[in-house]
Amino acid sequence: MVKCANPKCNHHRPSGFLESLWASRGFVFDGRWFCSSSCYEKFAQLGQDEVASGTEADESPSVDMTNMRLGEILVEYGIVGSEELSACLDEREQSDKQVGQVLVEAGLITREAVLAALSKQKGTPWVDVFMLSYDDAALALLSEEEAKKELALPFGFVDGQVLMAMSAAGDKEQLAELERRMGRPVRSVFSPAEELIVAIKRAYSPDRPVEEDGVLHRLSPVDRRLGQIMLVEGMITPSQLEQALVAQQKDVSGIGQILLKLGFITAENLARALGKQFGCMWLDLSASTIPARMIELFSSEIAYEFGVVPVKYSNEVLDVATDDPTDRTKFKRLESRINRRIKLVVCTTSHLYAALEKYYGKKDESIDDE
Image 1 (tube, helix red, strand yellow):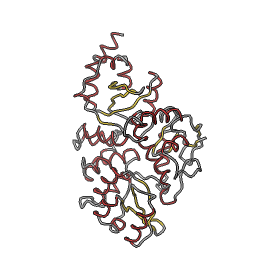
Image 2: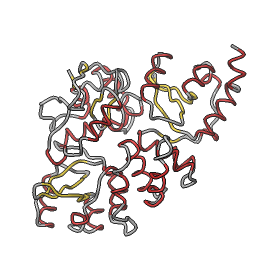
Image 3: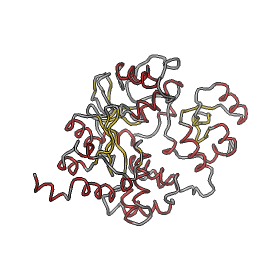
């Protein structure tokens, strides 16, 4: 059995039950299963002490996974089945893609689940560098050039050790060299190289005000990551995020919608940031021509009810375009309704509704026709 990652919740689900990360109640975030979004919120509010303490909130297999293959780890956690893994390995033999990439593209798991499994393989926790607060004293221990070269980001301290996000976390030789260079012991945590490259640039930027982290931690956990992504990508400034936070006191909308209303970002900015947040590809739906056979997979009622347009079907996974990938429960219902596994791609709201009208007719007309 797998327990909800919120330590104050006692809900469990059977291990190995998932056919996809949406195939049972709740959802997986950062490799942990939560029975509901409210449990995730409560878990996040307990504080980010996991990295510092080296403990984990869920009940995980106690097997040493440092010598296991990625696919074996995913099966051990019940995230994919052995048959799904075998099919993935067969497909991988015909391409140069990694196992995790094949599974993600097939819609079987999210990128976050792959990262969590990689952290088990490396024997060290995985940290989301977009959610970190940076300690300037830690950053000073390594120059920006050294951080870029080593793909290592010092971001804080715990028990006299330097907390270091690394793409090669678990590499004892690199760890020893960093400890020698800084003259301090290091506790490494895993982060993928592509995220570290962006985070290092942001962390060492002279344009990053000290108050930036304070603004972020006044946001809800979900809005916080979206805000950090927009800051890292240069879509907004800390001052603009502060203004949006003030506006949110009178507006129940999410921080992305508020930034859009204030004119600080474009609709495409928001869609791209949401895609990065939820591991979805961005699609310019206005430039896409969707075949009639795809459109026929949905009735107009389903398309409008769920706010989606089917765009591609491959390997028994249906790609659907949406402007809001945040409601996992809704997309779980859609999978059940159409009896197909789906994978989300993100588009702007205006492009989505233009496509809905183009392919399904206006909403009122489609309802009247039925």
